[in-house]
Image 1 (tube, rainbow, N blue to C red):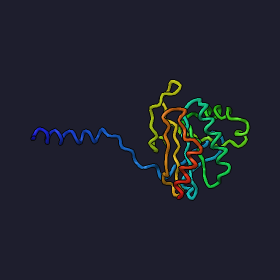
Image 2 (cartoon, helix red, strand yellow; image 1 turned 45 degrees about the vertical axis):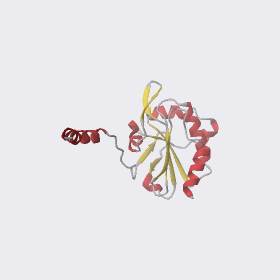
Image 3 (cartoon, one colour; image 1 turned 90 degrees about the vertical axis):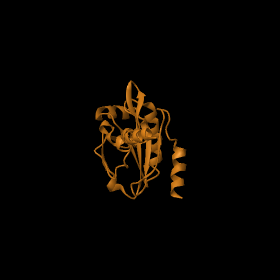
Image 4 (tube, rainbow, N blue to C red; image 1 turned 120 degrees about the vertical axis):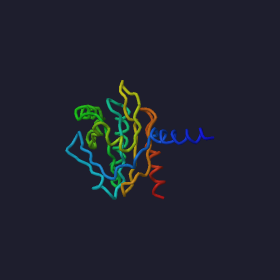
Length: 177
């Protein structure tokens, strides 16, 4: 019994130190676009739903399709701001956007840069996905309410695992009830 209590006294603090804990999402952040002169600051956009689309690093055809789908949707929903975020360099992001279809290129939203995936880390988007020979953060969508607080998130398990638009619409509609 004494051994068990003594072991517990030493093991519990060690276990607590080993556990991964995530802090709250940032209350404010600023992102700069790699494709335009736009800057986004969360504090300046209270009152609107802000949707963060964390896209994969490197060339990603499924990220292009995801961006095209949500860009078309966002055009009809001015109460929402959709931010497409990549951790690539500015040059890589510009090259990547050149592959968007012609219709989307006309209304291409700014593609924001998240150097070293700093914002992805602040939002606790898991890292560790193997993609094109690199270890990257998983694809994710985080919806923030009009007060900047997280409404919901979807983290894909692979490159092809994205929140479908119809599921996003249903989830958002359910949050408004």
